[in-house]
Image (cartoon, rainbow, N blue to C red; front, side):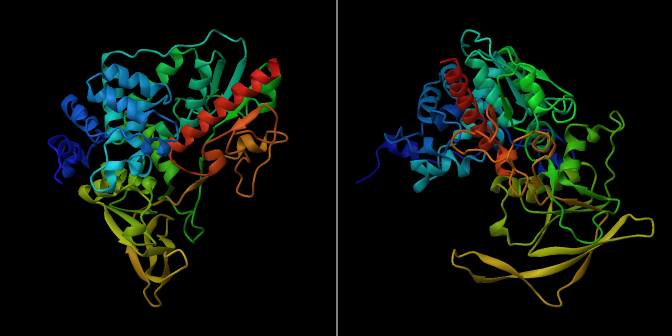
Length: 472
């Protein structure tokens, strides 16, 4: 039996659009790398959706988007309907279309992906969202005001999602953000070339139009506590303060000048605009050779940023092999294209400095993969006598982050675990403190933007149920 012409059209993989710039050129500026679909490409890609009866793609979406429905509308050229359908569940579609790891979420379950390229769900979502931002945003319907106040601590993806869902239900929501710009990790953690700040702020402005108040420069735990917010008239609080406490390797030399946490390095670059020095007086001293320790998306962001800030060489130093790199394949590919070098199966044991206390080199140890364990994973094993010196001027530590301890430590009756994460129900986001909910990285540890958004959605739903039960 042969395929019909329609079937052939459906299974033809539609590759991602090529970046607009040559890699050597784009590695010297902060312009967005990944280009979006054209109208024609978005329609053609949406038409590849098989509209499966069991809708397997939906099980991979943490924010519960009705993927088949929005793809059907996009396939018919009804992009206004498509974005309206997306926004029924997703408060940040232009963001998700760029940074959500769809290959491990919705696209992972796409039926076409079993034998062919899965439908480019994320890229179609991005086109729909970008088109709306360009032509005019239509706000969703908002329920009549309830007169009930809810505080959201943190304006990252979890907090913004929670605030949006509660606002649509008629609650008066105030978001408290410690920094001077709303957006959390979307603003300070992800580089401009991957997620333009104008896109994030456009999404934030849409949230304000729903009636959400955003108080920046408001450090909860310092200026006021969660308890004081509730005493001031907020009937419930959602904590979404993320994971802003950087981890270090605890090796000698990490206190030398020229060693940064990825958190500081990217915050100074993104939020404080160090890449525009001297117009913005927040310079970052970058040497000729930069080593980034880690293999995740944050490490790739830091290594690619270093090149854009003037480094002649930028290295990823990672203890495992390329098959174990936790970063998205697309980000690794872009890093290779732009000239980032990889020292894999390698780990530093000491950072050396000169007489003035500035980084000059790094002692490294080589590894090989050992025998597979019960799960089939091969752990790295140090190779005796493989020590060598890597000449470096700058070291960026990107091995993960923990929860910011300020809010948990200043909130009475709030249970935290040994790692400092807030203990909250996976199903509801409820904490040990009545009326206080939490979600995102402050609960789970560092994870993805979309997982944090899913937690924000769960928190909003549970807060609504909690507040309605109090009225009964």
